[in-house]
Image (tube, rainbow, N blue to C red):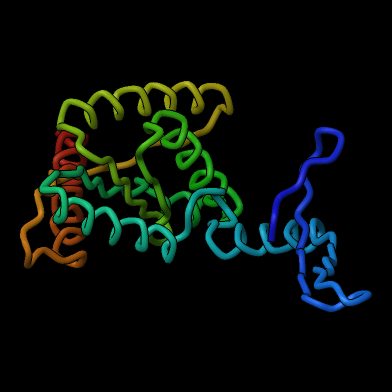
Length: 209
């Protein structure tokens, strides 16, 4: 399969070759088939398979594949990466009081806000209903703190813009992963999840003081 260009537009074509004899000479017969429409359908199916339909970011399956590759890369190159576990605050309360459609809006809005600030080399994916994971290769604690300062400011702006009666916020926890040979995905995610719950507990405690 080749990608051809015609009048500035890209087209995918499939070329088949056959060796034959013609008038006592060896010749090659080439047949070309335009498969541009087929490739477009293939690309659309690939997007559906890898994308979370509500938020537009990577789904869990594709995100976990990315995390596995990052872990392997870090082990091979003796580098580190930051893993951040994110959990939307008060989603159940929003669902119960304002309906699941409003809850979906909250999930989508927070995902969009996070996506707008993560780096080009980072990977954000939806891990569960109100949970996300962020992979940031070779990043630091200062990076994630600055990131969340920007995200929280934008969420405050969106709360005012859409006049929402509830808070738009998420708790997060992170670890810096410097993998050893026995490091595995479940352990890393559990550690980041534990760090997130510590931050969530601190936030709730300070709210009721």
